[in-house]
Length: 385
Ligand code: NZQ
Ligand code: ZN
Image (cartoon, rainbow, N blue to C red; front, side, top):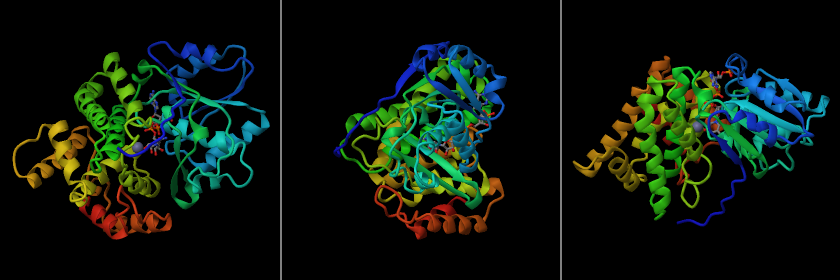
């Protein structure tokens, strides 16, 4: 096992009817800005519940944070924070709203041009406003981690950043708030959580026995609950399992002491920034091809994954690896999520465009061995055509 430090200060309040707990979680004297996305939070009644729970506190609102939140939109929220002398942020939404709130929390107190926060990967964050979250979409894990991803629309640049100052103080996870999600977003959430787990598990063995078993348990849980999560929107028990599994997939626990990949995410971010494909959908395009191209360096873990997650025990090692990758692809396709670029009418020109953006953003040595250079990214993308 590798050396590690693990610290996660986010308090989780989980369960039905927990939004009312905001009345205790948010400081009484706070001047709050509630941040949300498009129409969903208002339409579903979640915003009304939040307003009620905040009671007499001074609170303002900023709506309109879009999926794949943009720097341009978020800077308008930063202006409002300064204008209204806000000292506490409350995100109400999915990963995009929570990530956007993290950017606003850091940018509002940043001396200099706030895009540097993303360009520095978060290293330049010295201060941040405190914030909490009410999660409405299980997928990203943003509710219990210190990372975020923002997009500079003007340049099609989608960059991740993280900072120890950007953990939510608390997150309220009420599984019944997910009942209103469109099926497509539930499928996206299943795939995002699945790939987060794979990025931290499917690398090479370092005798991290608990992390491996924990990751395999999360993957098996996602596979097990997927049909019911899609078919029965108001099945509380299934949604509760989806919500907690997605949080556990990216709260630092399974990634402690193990090598991590993240190449699928970095290539996927370019596909979102260029073609506006939902985050999880880009991951389904990249991962199966990446596993194939990287099958030599991931050999041992691919066999372990095949056996323990998919029950693959027969055939030669190469056949078992083929089967493991095929199961992964079939799982995504079975959720209605394509694994080929052609499904989005994208061809060779998209491969060239993504490679140019990877080069422009310095994404030229990705993966757990830093061996995914542009030539290898080309092979991965061409295998996904
Ligand atoms: O905008 P509204 O109207 O609210 O609709 C949203 C949005 O259109 C809708 N929605 C959310 N909750 C709903 C709902 N509709 C009905 N009922 C509800 N309860 O869902 C749509 C998608 O929301 P979004 O927040 O964009 O989805 P997701 O949670 O998948 O977040 C994706 C973003 O997170 C980033 C991605 O890159 C992407 O920008 N990620 C963040 C990570 C992190 N911070 O650790 C890690 C991830 O890998 C990921 O990169
Ligand atoms: Zn993701």
